[in-house]
Image (cartoon, rainbow, N blue to C red; front, side, top):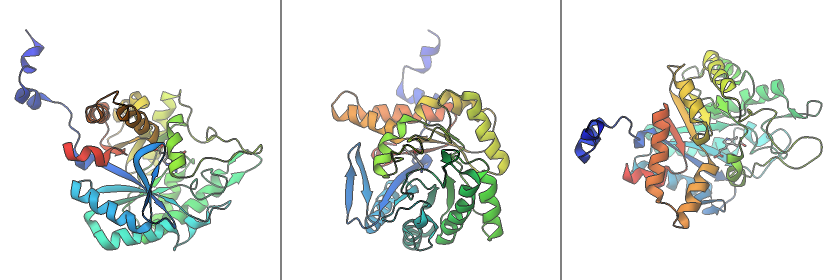
Length: 325
Ligand code: PBG
C-alpha cells in the first residue's frame, strides 16, 4: 500500500484534507422585489424567493444566525425605463434596502450590491442602448454606473460589485468613489463573466431577461464573454486587477473551473466564483426527484471551487449548506 495508508481512517483523512469550504466563504444572493408582501418562490429555483423589503431583514437575520455573514443584493423595482432610473435614485429600491439592512445589523453583515442595469431597464439590457451598435453603449453606461455606485456607497454598501461587463468599469467606479470620499470602499468586479445559458433561472428571479425586438438582440453576447474563450477570460480579470479591482470573480463557476485555476495562478488578489442560478437549478431539480444526494453533491461542487483556487463563493445553496459546514 502507498497512498491508501492516509485514507484508511476518517481522522487521518481529515488531517490531510487539502481544501475545506467554510461558512465564512459563502455569500448569499438575495432578490428584493418592490411592493411584494412576504416572499414568493421562484419557479425555476425551488427554495429561492423574491422577498419584500421587510422579509429581507428576516432573511438576513436567519443567515447571520447560521453563520453566513455576507449577502449580495439584487433589486426588482416597479419602475423600469430605458435608462434604469430607479437605480439612480437615492430613494430607489436598493438604496432603501441597503439603508434598512445596515441600520438593523450594522457591521454584523457584509452587504454587497450588484451594480448593473438589467433589472432596472424596460429592455432588460445591462445599460443604455446604442441603436447603431445594436448593443449597450459603453461610455454612456459608465457614466450612469458611476452615479449608481455613489448611491450604493451613500446608502452604506460594504462592497460594490459591477456585473455589466462594460470595458473600463472598475477604473471609472474607482475614480467616482474616490472623488466622493469613498476611497475605502472595495470593488468586487465580475471580472470574467461569460454569456452563459446558466443564467436562465436568474432572469426569472430578477425579471431581467432582455426583451424581444428586432432592433437589439435578446442575448448579451455583445458585452459578456464568449464561453469558448479561456485566454480572454484571464485577460479580463487581469485588466480589472490593473484598474484597481479589490476582488476578482469568475462567473459561472462550475463549467469554468479551468479559468478559475488559470486566474488563480496569475493573481494574488482574492478570487470569487459565482455558482449561478442554472447550476443551482440543475442540482436542486435532480435532488427533488431523488436522483442524487443533495448535500453531498453541493459539498463536492463547493469544494471543487476551493480546489480550483477560489476564495469567496457566491451561492444559492448557502442557507442549505451552512448547517453542515
Ligand atoms: C446582471 C447579473 C446576472 C447575474 C448576476 N448579475 C444576469 C445576467 O448577466 O444576465 C446572474 C446570476 C445567476 O444566474 O445566478 N445583473
